Length: 321
Image (cartoon, helix red, strand yellow):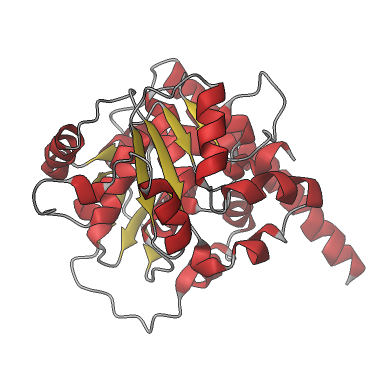
């Protein structure tokens, strides 16, 4: 038994090394502009048959599955989700990563969650190693550089931005995510020194944000607020100031507000996000892919040493740990 355990550990280390090399290879090809555009779509499939959490958790589930499929040469097939109406995954195909919705609505009992995917991955330790390593910042940086908004809705979201009186990279955005008022429970999962710094972002309060904005000399920039509405007192602190939200939109939204909020947050010059929130992290990833000189603020004081990039210090990279 002991020999089997040692053998498995040795295989796990080897497979993990392979997946890291795989990610470095993909990312280096992207930087060199050598994406293979003639890759044939695989015949075998990797099914993702259940969804969990909110929009941004599911978006990460698809991204992780795409990298898994690319590693084992399988296309990813998913049960139906409105997300595919808003995001375009076609650029992933240049790197051998394919995803499509099932032609038939796959019925689930709502409990498959990530365990279903993990169950499939357990069949191949190499794939499981990649999935475990999904926090790798190279993977996330490459993924968000390939992710696109569907043109079908992009023009409307840009119209909303203009209607709100905002221009790209010329405003400050704050994401107020309260995690069902359980921020302290999530923060407790991190070392104390991290918890003390990210506590300010869960959620941000108007006085802290105002001070940081003032220190950055950005007082003249418009301030956009996206909130989950779970802490009205916190929200009201901002709305007592001159701030902008989707409530200022002059017409009726044609699409779910969560997509518009995600888009607007990603177009800010400075983004105050919640360290714990996947929504905040995805918005920041979209922003920093498009505008690498922008500023993301997830903690006060900052967690990372000066000179490190967002990708080295985001939650997806385990914040420099």
